[in-house]
Length: 246
Length: 324
Image (cartoon, rainbow over all chains, first blue to last red; front, side):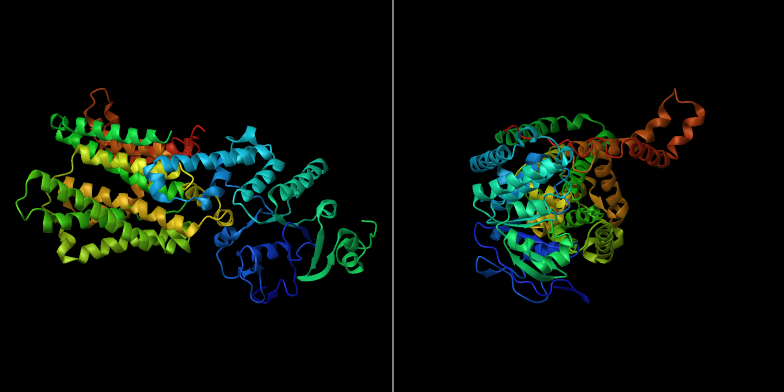
């Protein structure tokens, strides 16, 4: 990926298997979020290949890629700020509607049935993630950790096969981080997802990821299990500095 | 739960029909104001779908209105009155002319909606403003549409019933869209386009749809207007008219249909009421000049309202959740 003269991601090849939880780490500006934006179609790669379930996703609009089964959260929370918690999740159910505009206007029994199905699906999701009590409050009123959780719920409402989490632990305190780790594990198992996690927090990444890739200046410098990464000299040099006890 | 809006719409339509039969008893001046209110409700509620719910900034609503007004007037003049038809037939032609005017405006909405995909905020406002002026310019030079002389001779078909039936229909359509999972796409686009795309929402479709639906009803409002005033002139659809509608939407509270309708009523009555202030005997002499300078006072009132309630009369968040 190249932005004008700036080569951002230059040597990075990498894969996530079904049902795997993979971490992507790297120092600030290494290109982690850019990788996300490439996968989700926000940017179009200047060279290289990206495939999901055997088919290339390059050149598709982001909403088409989401429809193929890739959902994401954002590093800086991007909830639909004027909507309630419930309506945030409902907006993400939009793409699975079987019926179009005529149903919304005529409001027949088919419309009722579908809206009820969606309602109960949302209620179920909110229940799983402990947001039931907040369903009608404005999403802006939620505490920070809950907003992050709501982003995950919203992404799950699109029924993804692959979930991309962009720094879900950012700004959380240690207790919230432990909660979050449990939550990610749980989500992955419950929904049978593949998860790609970008994260700064070493404890979180090392704690839950089955495999970790390390990105530095747009190049992959290492890949392996948490243990291997921790003892990789390149990683230590690039990321963890000299403090080998990390 | 969702049968209710439909019943409500039907009841409103019947009420319009009943009330319409009394319209002969009202003085022509008041009748004029009342019809003006209805037309402004249609314009404001439909613009609210574009500006309020979808977060686009259109300044060209009067342009859509002009397209509808001229199309329907031209259809009526060309086909409506030539056969010596009975009441039922002329009424149906009138209705068809209104719908055709709306469809022409919707087509224009499609044409304007497409640049909206690349532009946002101020830039889109300028494009829509330009569109408004282009439409006006085309009409000013189109001989078959009367050019600078204006277009007249339509029969006055528009009455209380038609105006408020369409006002009710506009409100119904906008609310039905927005209060459904389908319509949550509009709100998602307004709040965060990138997040909306990431949640699988086709933002292009929703933006264009908002323009098409909004323009359709503006076109119908134009048709109603043309068949009420029986004379239309390009200057009646200039950007000042567009601003009037935008003011109604902002004053009522972007994305609040109730607020926007209330603002449409208030802003139609207010200038008229300021005109009458002169007749009040209790008014001190030094205040009399108000009537001559009523537009200054009108603007002043708008400024005060915006200073005291920047979120609009009803605010944006009167978002009623459907009971689950």
